[in-house]
Image (cartoon, rainbow, N blue to C red; front, side):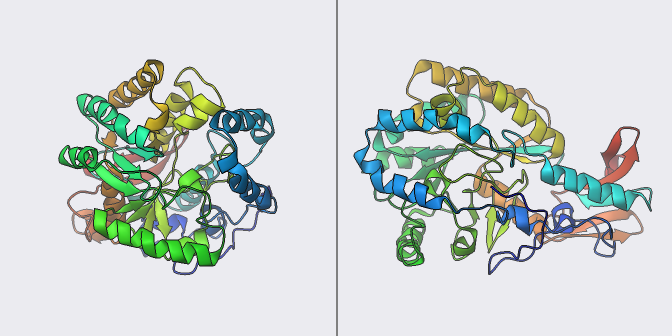
Amino acid sequence: MNMSPDTGTPPPAGSERSTIRELLKVPVDLSDPVDVDGVLDHWLYEGYVDDSQGWKRRLYYMMKPLIPRPIQIALRQRYVNVQAETAFPAWPIEPLLVTKVDAYLRSLLATRPEVPRIAYWPGNARAAFVITHDVEWDTGLRRAPALAALEKELGFTSCWNLVPERYPIDWDIVDELKAGGFEIGLHGLKHDGKLFQSRSVFTARLAAIHAYARKWGAEGFRSPSTLRNAAWMTAMQFTYDSSFPDTDPYEPQTGGCCSIWPYFLGSMVELPLTLPQDHTLFEILQHRDIRVWQEKMEWILQHGGVAMLNIHPDYMLADDRLALYRDLLLHVRSLPGVWHCQPREAARWWRDRQASALRRDAGGWRIEGPAAGRGSVLMARMGSDGVVTHDAAAV
């Protein structure tokens, strides 16, 4: 994998350039620092990734139907040491973009005492926490009511991503989830690893995917096994996508967008998968506790990101796994300043924030646009230990 310093990678067709300015939503009349490259496309759209070995992944998916599931897991476990040697993006935390944002603010603050920006999340939230479930088989769907009950008990709701053409869907369960306030999304079409096999296959399947999304009222998409192609995916017509991890060397398609914040992929909001997947932690790496989740969650909270979690009900069948999931939800619930929301809520907020701007009037800085009334203005300044922020309204 090549980590190139070149950040001039063009965004996929249909996407605007993604910049630190737009991420922070600083005032339009504030000039960018000349000593910091504020363009993020190279990382967000994985321009640094060398996929010359992609033929191995394609061969694996050709052979996968012939390989018993226990052998699949054993093969992936044996490959862990090789994958763990990946230097970039670092796992489970890749600080590259956090460091770039910090450098950008430091440079601005070298010439002014404070820099205003729009807070990442509505109200006084310091971070967002989003739960999703990729339902790979009908056995996982049958497990949904038990997991949903646990989430409701602890004050959470989630999104359930279903595969339309892989297993029979029990609509009684789905309707029960919807009635309980849960969201339904799409998890590919067939879950056979072939969605991005060729442009013609992708185009043909996309028509069917869009038809199911309209029929089900689904606003979000996640690609099976997080296989992805940023350039092709700009043609997708969803409110949001969540197929890009910030960092994941253990998936069949390695790499990541390096971002703990949402961004735009064509017309969609991209909600990156920022917490390690349960399958990775417990099936592949064979962890027996939630320390990695806790450490990553706290780092995301520190930097104002979205903690996007993916739990597979197909692998949450044992009591010990359910206990670990409960422990995580209790931990998140104990953290102050976390907005618990569904992915469609996070995406709608990010779209509103993107369409808003800061304006100065006699009373100071205010938000103008659809985020007004929900968003807050933060002021950045240099403290003794680096850049610090405070709520402008609290001054």
